[in-house]
Length: 234
Image 1 (cartoon, rainbow, N blue to C red):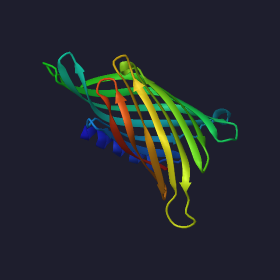
Image 2 (spheres, rainbow, N blue to C red):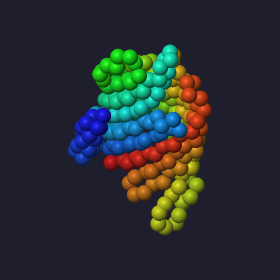
Image 3 (cartoon, rainbow, N blue to C red):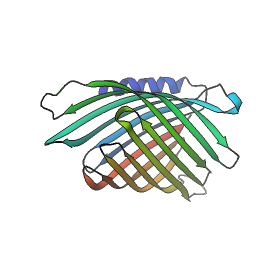
Image 4 (cartoon, one colour):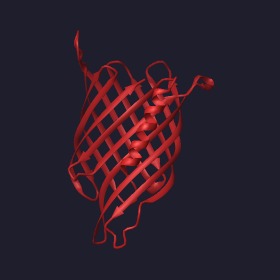
């Protein structure tokens, strides 16, 4: 896991340092009360080709997660890393701040499960990934909604996030945005939801976001979660 994360981080830094087009660098970490975690690092970069004045972009997204589940009388610990390169298109919807984006690409996944009688090595699989999202952005408020599907495990994920500027100092740091985050995910084996408040503080070119709240999983029941995110445009 450490080797994959180091190689991906080096690739992200190289690509962002040589970029000539507008892009976004984003990362985050989330953990729940069961000590299950999800961490990610991504780069989205605009491409110079603009057919019909549409914005074409490339995205590279890497993730690592750890979770537990039950099968029969066994508790299985899963450790998963994935890498998803994709191409996408953004369509501006008028001049009111709305846009619609879609992206797709392959997903490369490394998975290790512990708890079976005959534990095997890390399995490698390749699948397909597709995502659609809509964004409304103004300086004082924003709304972002997305839904994605990964063919590996037939996994669906959806999220709606809204933010509102609640504090804007005349001088010095820092503006404060408050909002709410609602997400749902699952496949034929499980379903889960999470929801809670968030706070975002821009510091220079970086946007720091903290969130947390209530989560429900069909296997483990109710609990809590917390997460941190960092985003910067370049």
